[in-house]
Amino acid sequence: MSKHVFLTGPPGVGKTTLIQKVSQALKSSGVPIDGFYTQEVREGGRRTGFDVVTLSGNRGPLSRVSPSSDSSASTREYRVGQYVVDLVSFEQLVLPMLRNVNHGGDTEKRICVIDEIGKMELFSQAFIQAVRQTLAGSGTVVLGTIPIPKGKPLDLVEEIRSRKDVKVFNVIFRGHGLLSPGFSAVTRLLINLCLKY
Picture 1 (cartoon, rainbow, N blue to C red):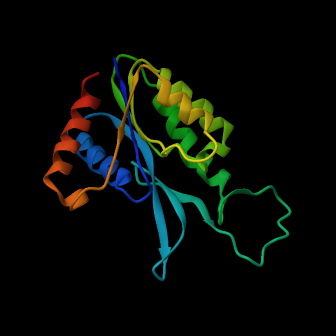
Picture 2 (cartoon, rainbow, N blue to C red):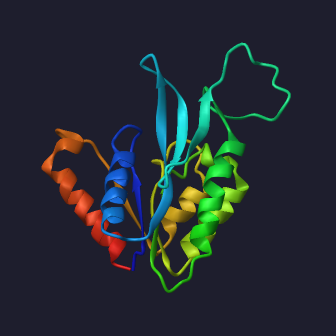
């Protein structure tokens, strides 16, 4: 039986928006919830990177477009396409939150939002370990996002897809997208799945 809920789909389809709506609804219902989501950073109408935003309101850089003139970086750079990942910032924001979720008592059910488990986040071995611990926690339900399969498989993503306690929903864009009546129905479904445990 599924315990954890993951959304997948192409970039820009609305996975993070769904996660935010469900998180707000759960929080306003008094359900213990913590976690993070990623948000685009735009300057002058152009995407320049991504930030990590925790549900408690902390924010920090996940990645930024690499300046083309900075080709002689003396420290190790983690890159995905044109973006340089700020692993230190990511780990400082996310790891304490995941440790906190994992060290809560198993008697109180908690929802942990993890948006997303993608290439940038997977440079962190400590994050991979923390995600595995969170998925194994008996009192925690994970509501997360994973990328659609593309190119070389990501080990942790494939591991999540194959878990018997995970239900993966493919988010697709139809009609008016997130403004359609179906969006409210999907939001309610996700809330009910999270509250089931």
